[in-house]
Image (cartoon, rainbow, N blue to C red; front, side, top):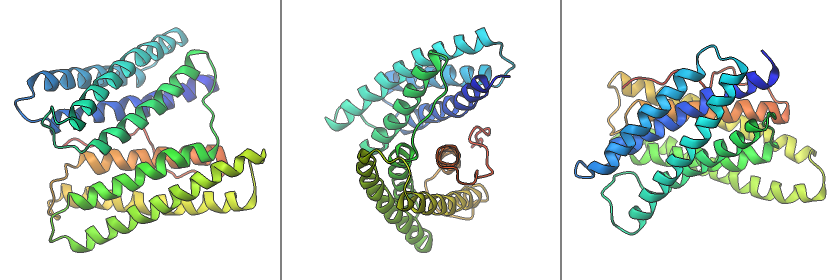
Amino acid sequence: MTDYEKAALFEHRFWLQILGDHSRFIFNSLYPDEKKEMQKAGMFIEIFDGLLDEARGNLLEKDLLRLTRKACQYTMELKQFKLQILESHITGKIKISLPPTFFNHMLNELEEYQGILYVLIYNRMPKAHAVHHHLLWLLDGSGHASWIGNNLDDTERELIKISRNYAKDLEGLYLKAVEMKGYLRTGKSKFPSLEKFNEDAEMKMLDFKVFLNEIEKLILEKKVLSTILPLVPDHMAREECYYLTKLAMAAGINAPGCEPGKPRVED
């Protein structure tokens, strides 16, 4: 298998499962009378599960290109669906329990995959600077932490406190990443403070990923009071693993020792 094929399968096996998760989140959050949207979300669950099954198979080069093209098509269709729901959400025309910012972040993630797909279509390897990954995933991680804290039962005060601390810390790192992006205008892609920042972000996200795994375990064992399905922290932990893996590739830090494309937990 060529380096290109390995890279393409790595991306597909992560992202197709993530978009299947997103489709599940939308389906589960729609009110029962939103039948049309529920039907469409269910359709996307089937589509992305099917594409993921293909990506996990033994693909020839021509099959991989065909999969990439299909992923392009259906990712664009899912984007339009998400935008439609978000528009209805912010104008009060749909009944759904997920907040608008959750949709916004799901769109940010989808657009990241779109950019990768456009590179893969032209038989090139996806590559981005470490700061690019910081800007996407640190804000996303802060949102994850906030969402976990907001969906724990009020009696789970210690876990809520931990979640809110992670949200604050990750947001602070995101704001620093915004400044780091500005420093790149000097033409310097590497400098000591950026190297230190990469390490700080890595350590904080590693810690947060451990916390997400603990939350998932507590939920599965019925040991925590919340409205959180086990798939949610599992999904988030896979995303943090992907961020850390891409950061290792871009910044030369240690690989996280986890698998971003591992099969999702079944509720």
